[in-house]
Image (cartoon, rainbow, N blue to C red):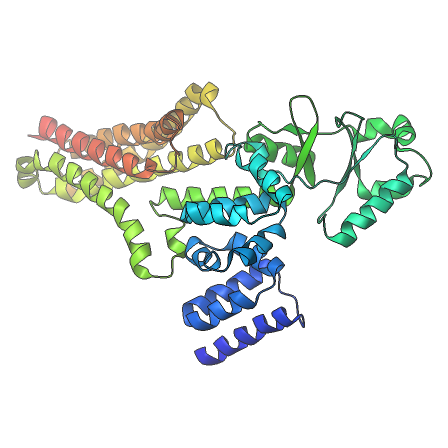
Length: 451
């Protein structure tokens, strides 16, 4: 059955290479992943046969362990593949290659045409959270003194040559290159082709006032503008208002998807790149680091418990109940942590909202703590019939759940303040807090009140 699937996918990719069918980049990349896993020889042979456009589009989506095979191809072939990409994707690919092998990235970069080098050099200098790092330099623009007919002819030429893809708007510039208007393509059909753009804008310009961002703006602000105004693309300008490029909804979608995936993996202490590796050893090695950290924190919790071994020996019920205190605290903290990390990631909160956010999470946790502390206190009282045991566990749960809510918000905000990804390490730190506080408060109160 596997051999048949391997043959079917091989035939499918070969049909794409021969031009009989067309696979999109996502489909092609998935097929290449399967071929690499099942037959390395076939996989490498197909890489050599892929046309430049297909190779470039697939390479952008490849995990590093597959991209290593691409950059092992001749410089000219890899350079041709990069030349076929839009400027933002070409920059991303060069950066990804640089992460694997800086010398190889330089060799490939040197093989590019001069214009491509200039474009990539411009984009690669932006910080990863700046709008400029996500923009495409390729735009469809015109000047006010052109006629609509000339603009349409220009659009036809650019589309036929493949220089522009996924065009949504016409960016209208003045003689200094400053952005003045954004006109949806379908609206161009409403006007007289012989009329100058300047005359059209005199009549309808208020409808086409642009929503734009500066190249230095945070990418989260761009995502918010795209969402608020339901834009298909947003122009990027410099401080003087000169048009530099555009960011499309596809770019924003990719950014948000990558960010969400990264946040989820980091919360679990998993390396997202390692999860795509082809061997169990490499993926397992990446997870082992955080498991080692977890082991250390678990030892800390065990040390706390060891201080109260006599209390546990005298009242066995304590050993039965203390995991409940820690578990409820952990779940409460995780709720606050998840909400806070998400809101930080999408820009809903910042340090100006810190006090309000901490008070909100503390209040929610305290209310839930009071409810479940009372419930568990009653259960413990009737379960073990030990005087004041219900009071002890209720007090402990109230303390632990309240602090779990507070630290669930405080830890990621503190890491963000230190310019550390709030998803990385937050869960480990939170688990340590809730376990130590839970065990110490429960066993400490039990020792103080019951013994």
